[in-house]
Structure formats: structure tokens, C-alpha cells
Picture 1 (cartoon, each protein chain N blue to C red):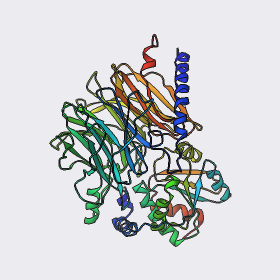
Picture 2 (cartoon, chains in turn cyan, green):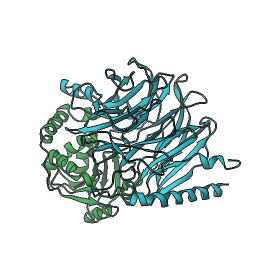
Picture 3 (cartoon, rainbow over the protein chains, first blue to last red):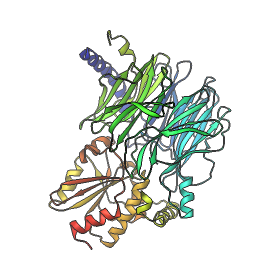
Length: 411
Length: 169
């Protein structure tokens, strides 16, 4: 059974690899004249619209580009630049442009623009009202007017149509320095739009003393609130995770500690968490990396706001080199992908749970590459889950991860 | 915690200096060596039989700046200390990283910068148990037994190491 699965994975890997290596070969990292494409660009995000069209946003040569695919990633439309003027768009595994398409085909894009002085940035937002043909001039969402750190933004559209942007903000750190006071880490801020991105609320602070350089995970909490999960500094140097519920009115509810790893570190881990809401229980599936005194490696837990603590804590991968998990759920089955490095190759692995995270399958390697790669992401479609993964060797990989599973008898 | 070890004054001085220096970005020559999967062995060979400190940093890491600022002061007092810098920034952005070292006063020390987009392989070549968190420091004794530290190295630990290992005062 295991052998059959592995073979199938290998066959699908080969067919994808042969198709997209050609695409990746057209790109030249050091040459500025590489064609603009999802394969040659960096740090892509992907989302399906309600008609099943796949939309991607990526960075190339100081522009954010948007492109779509009518055939699940086999080919893409000519990319359209979101910003008309080049800007220093920040891109890496932890910080990439985000894309959301709403039911009326409005396209929302957010990213972080690096500004001088160092470690500073602005939270940028643009949208398209004509199905991606043109984009509005980018706007800056942080409203403090400071050359301070505003980075690692995340974007989320609720069922009610509230569009949230959350980010890591250093305005309070700067204010403390001016007063001659100490301030540990950064802060979490957000803003909300109730008019499809035409305007945004004032900025609201969620928490002081967050970690400075990890992505923030967002999941729904009811029709209009959201739950967010981020790396927070507890006490003096403990960089574990916190969870909270944010409302459109700017209030923060139910803030609590979500992981107890005791990672004492005065450093930037560059490992942010992932979170989705369970369709079975309404609880939150969370996964993260830590190298703490209590836990080391990638972990999964189910967090319930009622219980106020992580449950079913499970060590996904404790091997050196493992990191960057991402969660998805389809047909009441939970999927978790992550990256590992064995000294030669990066392996992309998958585990599944059919009991709401209480138990997990053995890991299965989906892909392997001996060149550089982005963090993996899981994208939800109407008919299953897809892997979104940018690689140097294969270009942009967009591949269904639920299909092969379903045809396996007894799986 | 940063603030208990380093005075706020140092932090704000750092911040202000970057405001001024950043406003006029200049292309400059740097002394970066390209760090590949073989470079770590190369560095160790060049320090054969001798102690040294390897400091990994990135322009993307605010805590690194606290450590680098302190190291710069130490280097100013003892220019010959065996301290090797490795930037994990991509070599394509070397100008930005070089400007940083120039500002902070470490442009003269031996410096390397990641020169392979397969960063996992480079990290692994130094230490399979390093997860990419920064700053990351490695203390080597004369037999090259390696002691690692994640996060800002405390002033006390650094001074102690340099005093004990290298008999600096």
C-alpha cells in the first residue's frame, strides 16, 4: 500500500517536473531580462475565485504581478503589474504579497514595501475592480506616518465581507525609545475595510511585545470576526505563540497563550505559524516551529477558545532541518505539509488526519528537490486541496494533493 | 532581553546613524567572499589550531544589529580579534549588506555572504541543527570544538570568551 502510494507520487512528480523544468529554465536569477512569469518571479500566493479560476500574485523586479490560470496551473495569463511605479517589495518565505478574490471578482492585494531607514516598511494595498485588467494606485494602510517597521502583513476576507489586514508594527517601540524606555519586540496591529477595500478603518493595536519577524496566521471566527495566531514574547525572552479574536470594531477578545514550548531566544526565528478553523469542531488547528526547552521541531495542536489551551499536541517532525508547516482541510480530512532538509535535498512531506487532529498518518514525501525552494502553501479549491510551492528547479509547482488519496482503496 | 544588556542609548544611536547614512545610498566596494557549501571548511582551515568566533547575521534581523554594534565596539578596541562575519542575505543584495557593515563599523573584518539560493544546504554545511534563527554565533576553541548560541550573545559571555580564549584585557 505504502509502495503504491510512493510510486504514484513519483510518477506524478516526474510528469510535473518535466513540464515545469522547461519553464524554470527560462528564468535566470542573475539576469534582469528574465521573462515576467510566475515561474521566474518570487514568493507567490495563490487563491481560487468562485468560478474555479486560479489567481496568483508574485514579485519580480520590484513589481507585484497578478496572473490567472484557467487550467489549474498548466498555463497562466500574461501577468499584470499591480504597482505602476517600481517599489522595494519585500519578499521571502515569511513575507509575500497576498491575494484574495471576492464573489464580485474584486481582487485585493497586499504587500510590505521596504523603506529607508532599515527594518522599516509600509503596509501596501491595492485592488482591481475590473477582474484584474487594471489595479488602483497602491495605498499605505498604516496610519502613523512614521518611518517605522510595518511588516509581515496578512490579509483575510470574512464571510460577512469584512476585509482585514494584520501586521507587525514598531511604532510603539519607536515611541518608547524616544521616551528613553525599554520595549521588547514589536506590536501586532490591524485595520478593517467594510466597503470592499475602498477605505480602511483606523489602525488598531492587538498586542505589545510580539516577535519581530514571523508571519501572522488568520482564520475565521464567526461571520465577521477573525482569529489570529502569532509569535509573541512572553516574559523576558520566551518566543511562543499567542491567539486572539479581532472584531471589525477594533476590539481584541479572548487573547490567550496558544503554545507552551519555552523557546528562550533573543533572535528572529523567521518561522511563523499556520492556522485553520476545523469544520468538524469549530476549534482551531494550529501548527508551528519551535526550538524550546519543552518542545523542539514542528508541532501540531488543536486549540479551543472554550478550553483556552492547546490539545492533542503532536510532534510532526523533530528532525534537524524541518520547518514551515502549512495546514488545509478538505472533506473533513486535515492535511499538513512542511519542508525538511536531509543534507542533500529538500523534501516536501504530507500527513493527514481524519479525526480532527487526534491522530495522524505516517508522513509521505510528495516532492524532493536539490535546489532552493520557497515555503509550501496549501490552497483550497472546490474539488480539493492544492500545493502551491515555488522551486528553483521545477519553477512554480501547483499540484492537487487530495486526488491521489481518494482513489486509493482502504486508505 | 535586549534592554537589560544594552542601554537604550546605544539602540537609539544606532537608529539615528542609519537615518543619516541611509539617505545617501552609495555603491561601494565590499570585501564579501561568496559563501558556498565548501566555505565553512575553508574558514576553519584558515584558522587551523586557532580559536575564532563565527557570527551569522542578516539585514533582515533587528536583534542582529544589537550584537553587531557591540562587536564593532569590541573590534575597535581589539582590531585583530578572530571574528568572521557571515551574512545570510542573498549575494545579489550584497550592496545593502555591505552598507550595513560600513555603517556599523565592521566593514574591515573578514566577511562572507550566502551565495547559493539553496540556503538550507549552506546552513546545513555549518550546522545541521541550526534552524535559520538569527543572530547565530559559533565559538571555536583551538581544536575547533564548536559551541553554538542562538540570539544576541550577551556582552558578558563575549568578554569572558575573548578574555579566556585570547587573553585580551
